[in-house]
Image (cartoon, rainbow, N blue to C red):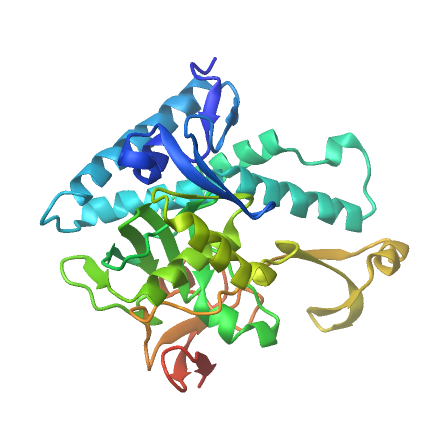
Amino acid sequence: MASNKNQHYVPRCYLRAFTEHGDGVRINLFNTDRERVIPLVSARHQCSRDYFYGSDAELEAAIQLLERSYAEVLRHITQNSYVLTDQDSDLLRRFWLFQYFRTEAASQRSVEVLNAATDAMGISGAEYRAEIKRAVLHAMRAFAEHMDIMDDMSTCLVRNDSRTPFIKSDDPAILSNRLYLECLPRLGKSFGLRQSGNIMILPLTPSILFLGFDRNVYTVRDKKGWCSLKATDDVRAYNQHQMLNSRANLFFRENHYGSEAGIEFAKIADRRPPARHRIHTMILDRSEGDHNFYRVVEPEEAREQGEMMVHMEAVYPAPPMWPMHLGVRPKGIVFTNGTGAGYLRRAESRTGKERAFRRVTLSLFGSTRSGFSLA
């Protein structure tokens, strides 16, 4: 039996840095549903549920070990003259990935997409319906099986030297992809953990942010693992990711940011997608040799055919701007084999799971805020 009933899906050791005085006691909150600031609420019960991970004592112990390791790394990062090490980079990638899988929002998205898929197939019955607790355990297994999937991503720490603080949400580990959001939507593609152009974002404190990026697509001028932001717009660009990705709440330490939170959220609220998934139902259209071709139809028509294919596509919010220090590489490269796998990073194209990949060069057009095209 787990020793702690109240289990945090955003750990207290992470939340503490955003609390008043950094002591883990009280924190400022902006509720996105009501668009209302709630000042200095108790931090103890934020981002938590009773037995969120179930009652497995071994799982609880493993989670606590990772959290203690993160807390130790954060203590080093906040010291003067800290230099980002490979070992600490590895820990931050792992912590980001674990946090990406673990939140209530992430589990709720899994539940929604799986239930939508069963609805599209016309499957009913409680035994087929997903629920949060099972989704959480599935997420923990996924983390254990794929914990090295982001190890090829370059990393740095971003120091905030502006007057606007970094904020966090109830789903703070952001996966984004400027390449896919700006260039590839017109091609009907989405992205996941394996794709080229991925960006990992996790604010660590109001003044420090962890950034992971695909160095074959982006450039960052960092020194000893650090880069500095002085422009408020660059900080706002990172905060917008938290606002767009949050389930219900944003958190911040500084009282003065409360009025700004409402203003900034109102500017981009219409960019929050109404659903974080799309379900496509397809039926066999024709066969040519060894290849089958499918066409997209409405679920009702697919069910009438008796045999269908269901494709689940993740939907990611697109921010209105990107931080200027995260530059686009003029001759960036991605890898594709022409299948639905899309454009993968070099490391993922060498896993041997799919047919041979070829390299594709990206062409940059316009300024660094403009985007990409494929050469």
